[in-house]
Structures are given as structure tokens and as C-alpha cells.
Length: 434
Image (cartoon, rainbow, N blue to C red; front, side):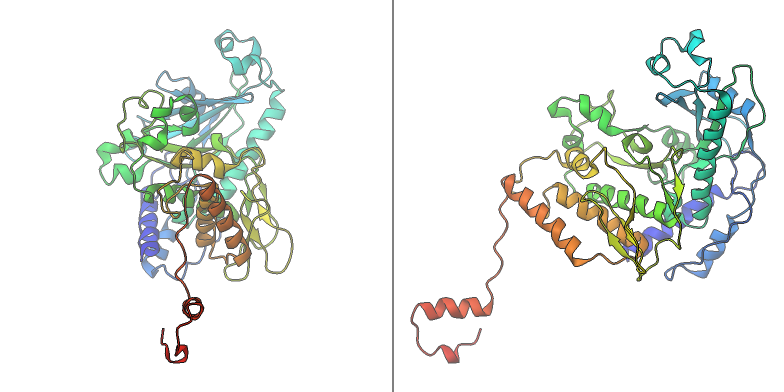
């Protein structure tokens, strides 16, 4: 029942993206994508609603428009690295359906940027990669194409669209005086908290988009995120399961992101460097805001994961993927530089003592992995092999004991009770009923 209601809500959310105006950010799917058939638990009404959203894009974003949004004083820096800068901006122009949308504008560094005075104060510029514009343009086109590929594969899947920023189709032909290359995407926004009140959309579209692990790293012990979250384990478990669901959506789109890490999976949170000291216990929240940065994505050959035929697989203990039932290797995202399970356990539960806690409530790496596996398997309808379940459970219990937890004793079996009585020398054991 919970699963069905969750899916229904997600498909309703798609309606917000089905707006019939000519704004460049109005349903940006290229033509030619075959709609996915409804899952068995979707109604005919839901299927018709999803098909309605599969319209062809009516517009594109030009390089000049993207540059204007990027240079606008209202645009805030969302992130920057050696290859470029990303800014976020809430649209306040265009038709009514465009107002309030939060977009991200990425500007790649090109040869010559290192000499521009306005960039000299930025460390990433001084250590950045400045390549000829044709090379940068080629990589930018690949990134947008792969992002659109994922969006189109999942065009009728409300479950997955929840986790993916909507890419804009770009006009690459214009070249401005600075020679920069731009791309635009509409970011996911916090619909659950904004609810159905349009007056709140701008606020919740602009709500924190960040890697909470960064703020957590600079927080004093008493201000760590896990100490500000509610005691209820439900949202924490959901956060871990949703990570598995995002990985499942990539598999559903037959893509490997190949750059899946904390900086490219954004979150909504009211916990920031500015609020960490003022939030009281139980006031913080955290939830995923979706996947960005598709520059290293590649397509996977084959049919993609098939329900009931394929199995969940784990190439390494902190990764998760699927193994085709007709043979082949495990297809999974590689996260070799970051063990997410350890990060999540620290972020959500603080790796605190398990003493006095039920083993099912203690946040260990093993528990995080089990929740990620669960979300991945559920979203794809895959089987989870018993050896994987057992291995992760053992890892959880071992860590639980190391951190002071005591596992409750298993109830004795009838045979064990009979043996104990037999050892006392009591007569007439053959008549004893247990």
C-alpha cells in the first residue's frame, strides 16, 4: 500500500512539467522516444497522463540567453571546479509557467579565461583547465546529449524524473565575445515541502541545494547534522533507500553516470554553515534534489534491467548494480573514490555508540548498504540473492557489536528446551508437549 501511494504521488508531480507554452524550459524532450508501458500497478488514467507529457520541445536556449542568465547579479554560484562554474537563478521572466523555476547555468572554462580580470580572484580559475573552444564545445555537447538521453529514456517515469534535473536543448551556434560555452538545466525543487501552494514554490525552489557533507565537515561535534535530525529513523532510512532508487533510475535509462559522487548528487536541506549552530535538535531535514553533471555518462548495451529475470549484484560491498539473467558481468556505477555507506552512516547516525540500542535501529555501514540495496531492488523489481543479504547483515551485526550493542538472544527451539530438561534428569519426557 505504501509503495502504491508513493508512486501515485510521483506521477501527479509530473503534471507540473506538462505545460504547453513556448518557453525554452517547457518540456524539452526531443521527438522519437517510444513511451514506456505502464507498470502493472499503474492505472489507465496514470498511463494517459504520462503519455500527455511526451510532447516535442517547442524551443531551445541560445548561448546568448544562457550568458545573460549567468551574468545576472541575481544568479548565485552553485558550484565551481577546474572545468567551469555553475550558477543558480530563479526565473522572473517569461510566461506564467516559467516564473519561479530554478535553473542552473553551467559555464565551461575556455582558453583565454585565465587572463580575464574578473576571474583572477577565483582559485579554480588559477588552477583550471583552459582548452580551445572547439574541444570544450564537443565535451559540452556530449554532456547535454547524455543528460537528454537519460531524461528521454525516463520520459514517462515519475519515480525517476523526481531525481533528474531537466536539461534544456541548447543552440550551440552562437559565439559571444568571451568565447565561453554554456548549458542550462532546470533543477529539481522541494515539491513535498512546497505542497500545492504556488506562493511557496520560489522559496522551496531556492531552498538549499548543496552537499551537506561539506557543512557537516566544518561543524563542531555538538552541531553535526545527525544531532539536529529528528529521532525518528524513518526519514534517514528513506534517504538511504532513495539513493538506491537513483542508481536504479540510471540503470533503467541504460546509462552509467561514471561520476556519481557527493558533488553531483544534490540535496535539499535547511542545515547549512549558516544555520548549523541555530537549528535545534529535531529541526533539521535532508532529502535528495537529484542528479547533475552528465559529462562522463555512457550508454550501456543490451536490454537494461529486466524484472524477475535479472538479479541485484554487488561488485564491491558499497556498490550496487544488476547482473543480466542471460550472463555477463555486474553492471554498476563505480564509486571507488567514495564509500557512500560510511559517509551516510556518519552523516545520518554519527557512527555513535550502539549501546542500549536495538540492533535494527543502530546506523552502521551494513545497515546503510542494506537500505541502498533495498531501494535499488524495489525500484527495478529485481531479486536480491540470499548470499548478499546474509553478507550485509553479518557486516551490520559485527559493527553493531563492536560499537557496544548486544543482540537479543534468539528464542530457544523446542528441541533445545527438551534437551535442557533432559539434562536435569526429569522423568516422562516422552509425554512432554512443548
